[in-house]
Length: 187
Length: 211
Ligand SMILES: [Zn+2]
Image (tube, rainbow over all chains, first blue to last red; front, side, top):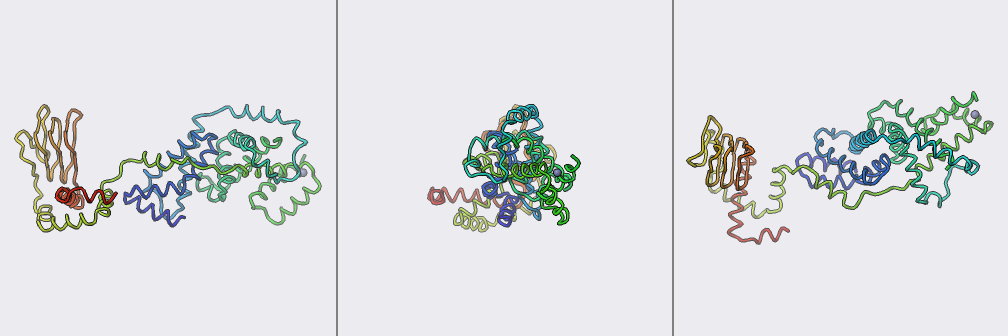
C-alpha cells in the first residue's frame, strides 16, 4: 500500500489531480474512522476528514516521501480534530459523574472474564455508549486511546503522529485507560 | 492500600507489552492474593475489549468525490499532459504542422523584445502594455515579453507570453485570458491552437472517440 501511495503522490506532486483521488480512496475509511471516534458524530467527522485530505493535498510537497504517508495523514487529521474539540469545549466532566452514579448498582454484574459475549459486542446501544464515553475523555487522552485501540497503531507511531515524546504517549495511554475504566466499569 | 500504585503501573506496562519478565512475575503473584487489584486489572482489560469492539465504520460513499471537488484547480501543465495522452493522433498531427511551419522555436528564441498586437489605443510604458481606463480595445490582444495591465476593456481574448497579466477590478475582458510563461507552455500554446484548427478541419470525430 505504501509503495502504491508513494507512486501516486509523485504523480500528484507533478500536478496530476486524478492520482489524488486514488490516494483518498485508499485512506478515506481510516481517516473518517479516526475523526468519528475523536469527534463522536458523523457530520463533523466527514467535514474534518475532508479538510484533512484537502490540507494534505495543498501541502503535499512538504511531505517527506521517505516517511510513511499514513503517519503524516493521521497527524493532519488528529490535529484538526483536536482543534475542533478545543473549540467546542463540552461539559463532559459533569456527564461522566452522572453516568457513574447511575450504574452503581450494576457493579455485581461485572463479568470476571474480560472477553465479551458476541451479542453484547454487536448491540448498537452498547456501541453508542462506548462512543459516548470515548467522547467524554479529555482530548489529550482521547487521541492516544483512539490511535492505539481503534487504529491499532504502535506507541512509536502515535508518538510520531502527535509529535510527543514516547514517555508522554505512554503516560497519556495509562491515564486514558484509567479514565475509561472508571467510566465503563459499571457498564 | 499500599499495593495499588506500583502494581497499577505494572498493569499498564503489561498492557503495553513493555513489562520485564521479573515485574510480570511480581504482578502475577500479587494478583493471585489481592482481589482489589484483580478487579482493577479485569476492568482495564474489559475496557480495552469494549473500546476495541466498536465496529469499523466507513466513510460516506460520495466522500472522495466531495474531496476532489474541493481541491484547488489543477495546474495547466498536467491538464495538457493528459490532453496530449488522450489525443495522440491530433497531437502528432499538430506537432508536425507546427514544426513544418518552422516558426515555433525561432519565434521563441529570436525575439527578446516586447511585442504587442496592433491596436491604436494600447499604451506602452517600459515593459508594460496598458489598456487605459475608459478605453475599449477591439480584437484579441497579444503581448510578448512584457506585462499587460488592464484598466479598461478588451473586446476579445488576451494572451500574455512571457509576462504577467494584471487586471484592475474595473478592467474587463470579454474573451479568454491566457498566460504563457515557459517554453513548454509556449509549445503547448502553439500545439493547442494548431490542434484546434486541425479539429475544425476534421470535424468533431476526435472528441467523440475519446469520451
Ligand atoms: Zn493489590
